[in-house]
Image (cartoon, rainbow, N blue to C red):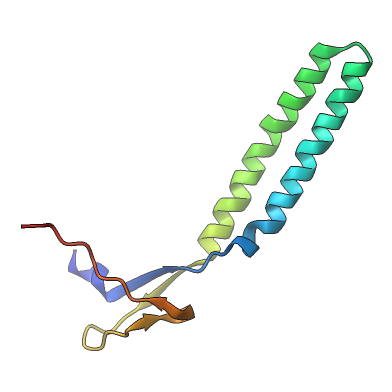
Length: 103
C-alpha cells in the first residue's frame, strides 16, 4: 500500500475538452426531435416516439464512450521522489495531502 505514495494522479480534463462532444450530441437530439415532429404531423405518433427512443438508445453508448475515453486521456500518472515533495503539481494544481482519520 505504500507504493501508491510514489505516484501522483492528476486529471487535466477541462470543459473545453468535452465541449465539442456535447454540441454534437445536442445536434443529434434536436435532429431526432425534428424527425419525431415530422412523423407526428404525419399522424404516426407511435413511430415518432419510437424514433426518438431509438436515436437516444443508440447515441448514448457512443456519448458515454467518448466521455470516458476523453477522461482517460486526461489522467496523468507521474512518479514522484519520496525525498522531494513539490509544492505544486503541473498546470498549477496545488499539491494535496492524503486524508487522515480523526482521533
